[in-house]
Image 1 (cartoon, rainbow, N blue to C red):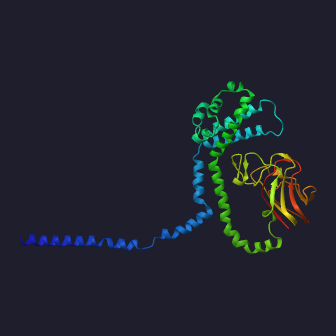
Image 2: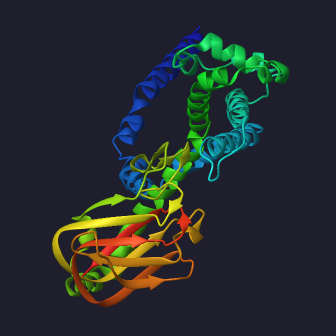
Image 3: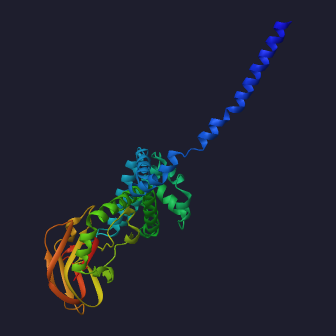
Length: 351
């Protein structure tokens, strides 16, 4: 009996000890939660680095493009077909009869391959492709049923279309093709925009630290960039090109203007009054067609009627600085004396 009492008392003590331990257990947790988290301290710095490098956003954009699979080839075909259609619509030399039907076919191909890219597989027929057309694109058409009928028709049926019927549908096919090609190239344009942001932002600190003092002296010696306050205009504007939005015919585009292909295209600046000028810095288009800007003439005028050539650069270039004897005038013109299209990424003018 005594042993039973002792055993019971011992069990009671152990039970009380367990309860005491359990009640005391949360204390270290409270103490741990009171400590600052090192991750929280690093987040502002990480966000700051990300703002400059855009590494996370770039990685995600690259993953998105890699996951496209066959869609990348479909996008390439769509862009190529669109380019063919545009060239047929705006030929350098007059084309023979039937060219509009060929343009209609090219735009149809652009639509078909764009739909293939959107769905990441090629439809079995044009009729199936039309059924898969995004509703927003279909709703933008004036006569979607009629356009769909022509789109799904075979070559024989298309060949029997009258010239008037072809012209009636050509505009809608062209608009639809441009919209879809621009849509499927959205991820590519997003990636290019991120790369441009990274290049710009990542270079800010390095530029500020290494050249701030020298740049101040340089700017003071040459004066302001007169192009920033002058008005400008080009000899013409290419259709379906919006350089202010960095797009041209559904593709990413860096130059700030694009003329049509013409004889002696030019870019003209109006200072508003006579200005003394001695240097022009031109940044040519980088992605292609650099030879279009050569030979490049710099001309100055007071009345836009009589122009004086002050500088010339004959070779193909990426960037070029043209210096010449200080010359005064109200207007400055950059001109290429041949049949070509003209486009620059930037122009700077100094006294």
